[in-house]
Length: 447
Ligand SMILES: NC(=O)c1ccc[n+]([C@@H]2O[C@H](COP(=O)([O-])OP(=O)(O)OC[C@H]3O[C@@H](n4cnc5c(N)ncnc54)[C@H](O)[C@@H]3O)[C@@H](O)[C@H]2O)c1
Image (cartoon, rainbow, N blue to C red; front, side):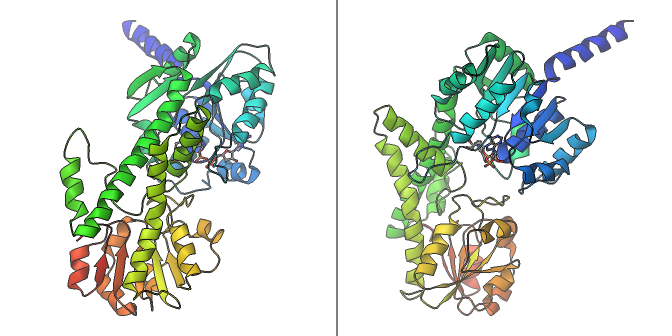
């Protein structure tokens, strides 16, 4: 009898804490991961997108981008019937919680574009049939919560709340990050919304930060701006290292071992790219301007990041006797970081553009990002194999630190290349080994 009661208790607790009907709007990197993770935790989840091709692929368990572990997770939940995909907003009708995970891309001038947020909020609002909690997971300026609330209010008399749960996952380890986040930030002023979100996240172990919507949204911008700052800071120190012959690897180590500073994001290199850091620093600068605050400090962080490209290209020119015209140069790595096929704001793109402009012939390779790169790069030769990409080349440029690039057969590469020059944009390749083999090696701020 007592076992029965205990069983019943746990069944009830589980049902009460986990089983919710959820819609996740936007099935990009954040949306698919969010949908699959909440399905895995026992909820009934709809993944919704306006992109029919994406949804058709997802229905078959095909992920439209590369993210380790995600395909297995999605397929498992599709099979269990916990996760479904659709282009039809009517799934909102039965959902208690709707996560908005649509893109918030930058405009050409760096300002933020919230069109997709407002469009999706309106579509959601039109389907609300009972109390619904709308949670903004996309990275948005802190005043967006209010605007979304107004959009929903204009469409429905029914009760609803707007909350914010900013996403901190990293592409390349998104699934792990979602199950093991460093913290969960829950922004809402509503008691009911707070309870719902606390219950929904209950199975995930992490410190919770409960706050209001604007603070939650500002936390996300502040986090990315701070990480970007660390990167630009260490790149400035690396610049000085190059000037005076100091070694940035040692400086970073000595710096990062101070627990007040920490070791992460102190790797000098080509600077930050990707769909978040550049966009979010620009957005915070724009947002601050709207509040009549000139965020000059962050503008400088962005400027240093931009100038890192020119600094690298100058290195390439110097090592190629001052001129790259007519010379074949090989690019190892196109994605903005390893373990992803995402090339948004990837450092490879402006570097290649500048070298092409200066008359270089470019051969590129990447284990995952070639298909995406083919959509934007036209005047380069693509190779799946790094060895093929290095044939007849006068310089190897390491742009993305994919693990296996450090383990390549460099004796073989030396024979394949026309001139053994390596310029390592991530201070990642085995420098001493390369020098011993007779390569001219240069990193960023290294000896
Ligand atoms: N990618 C990351 O690593 C990451 C990490 C944390 C936060 N974020 C933030 O999360 C948000 C989403 O990022 P992402 O990388 O997943 O974007 P993404 O571009 O990969 O995906 C966005 C999806 O939204 C869909 N969409 C657009 N308008 C829609 C609408 N009206 N209704 C339904 N779907 C719609 C698009 O078709 C697309 O599939 C952004 O604000 C981003 O800054 C991203």
